[in-house]
Length: 119
Image 1 (tube, rainbow, N blue to C red):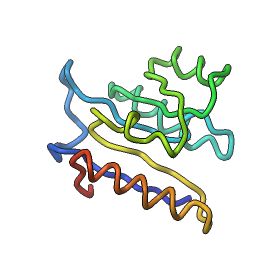
Image 2: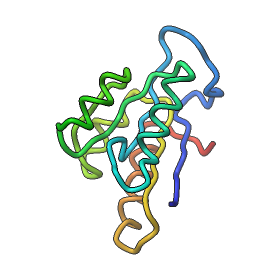
Image 3: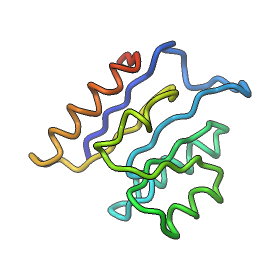
Image 4: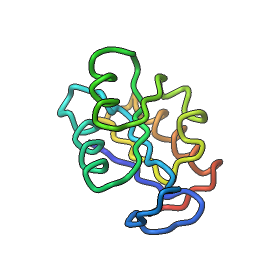
């Protein structure tokens, strides 16, 4: 699994505990393969972070994420602007393959457009 973790705008450490903390976007949050996105979502929520979970479909997995406390956004890797806007960080985890290379590059470009800095 390749991960791209970017910090947006402020570059602050994720350990902020303010009520106005911007969410962390987790792609593949409802995914089944390894459940990495779901595990990351749960871990961040357990630590008190706001999480925006990007899911492909509205189904039971999306509802389960809402019950955990995540803000769920339906979309795919072509609808990243809407999902990334307003987030402090992006957790983008994808399997390594030639087909996902373009999605990785596009996600990095969209994050940079919204003021990203490498973390």
